Length: 129
Image 1 (cartoon, one colour):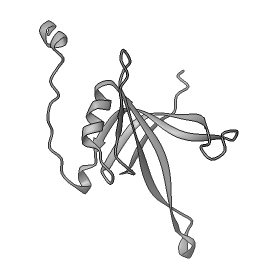
Image 2: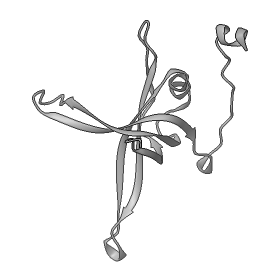
Image 3: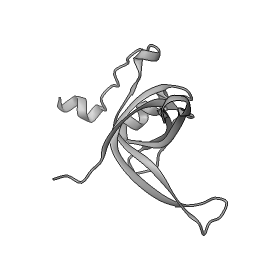
Image 4: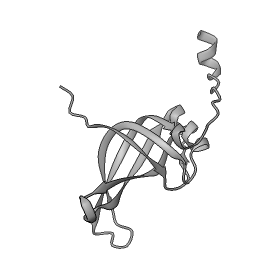
């Protein structure tokens, strides 16, 4: 039995996707996604927005970096994790963030249109294919 929590989230990008590249390391990209839902019943209903940090790696990271801007409607699927970090305001105080380590990211076509461009294979992969 696998002890992973798989999630799918439909929401909007809260900002630009940022690509991080280091020599000899796999590139990764991060962006924030806000997903809203209604809580309560009757007259006590209120909209609640949950925010998630999304991390992607390798070619998915490169594609997210050029495709996702603030407000882009996205569908994200991946493994839910928590990350702990020191607060910027109070370095001795630790905070926790919900992170989706995404294996799939798409534009939500119910809210707009997109045009697909196939990413060319790297030279060494296309030569062996």
